[in-house]
Length: 358
Ligand SMILES: Nc1nc2c(c(=O)[nH]1)N[C@H]1C(S)=C(S)[C@@H](COP(=O)(O)O)O[C@H]1N2
Ligand SMILES: [Mo]
Image (tube, rainbow, N blue to C red; front, side, top):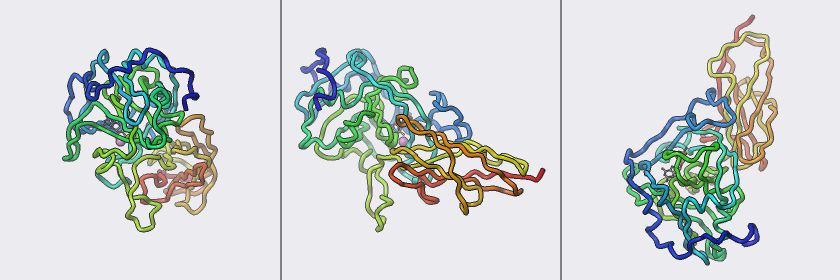
């Protein structure tokens, strides 16, 4: 692993990774409790790159106010060479940019079919997590997970936590896309966005992208935090008995219709332009459209994916009959996994339109 990158920079502080010191940059916690900035509706998400002001936001316990001059990140646990770095040092390290969809799983307290489409598409910039891990040299024989800590603490849904903590399997932590990010859409991360530094895990649900990051720790087991145990485990739909749970990690293939808008009116016979977005942990290779309640499906064109950005699909359909029409879109990923028709958080979207004879 040490050969992924050139020899690590020499300004790293190997003396001060004293546990607890990573929280000294915290000035105060704005204890507003749960805060959700609701996303625009799918038909309002017209731009390829979602501006900061239109991107949803999820804060469970309150937003920390951080003194950036005292912020630091500790990397410790099952590593040969633990260390800490400050913001200036982080910004001097090799960086990468990743364009990615950013999606919230929805509330971990209710049925996952609710609160869908909390999504946007943004460009993150930061230091690849695997570069930092390469410097620390994890013990790969025992270090199966990377835990990440945020500077926030408090209570969510009646459960107290001394920090927001998540975990990632080491394979995802070592992927090229996982970033320790300090910019979004070319701007430094704002306070609510998780600044000065957050984790970004492209392809996985937003809950894994720890904001106000202060510590990364290589560990043998999953984290015992409420955010990895009580919350953010879901019934595994591939388990026939319907009992087994799985962590909320990968995003399954999904799509949304941007045009037409719900209740748009058209006259027939005429062409109707249908377009929208499709995304998932794995690239989407096919999107099918139905305008007849799912009886027949036609293939839309889909833009290929470069990184983890959402993909555009498009199809013109010729509508001959007047009345109400139900438009559905169904994405399939490179592994052949298709969106379910109903009852899942990623079930196919439906838009209804009204068509009158000319
Ligand atoms: N420290 C911390 N990180 C966090 C959260 C949080 O409450 N605290 N919320 C998570 C959830 S559920 C989501 S969906 C994303 C939301 O990121 P955003 O607010 O930038 O959209 O951050 C994740 N990271
Ligand atoms: Mo979320």
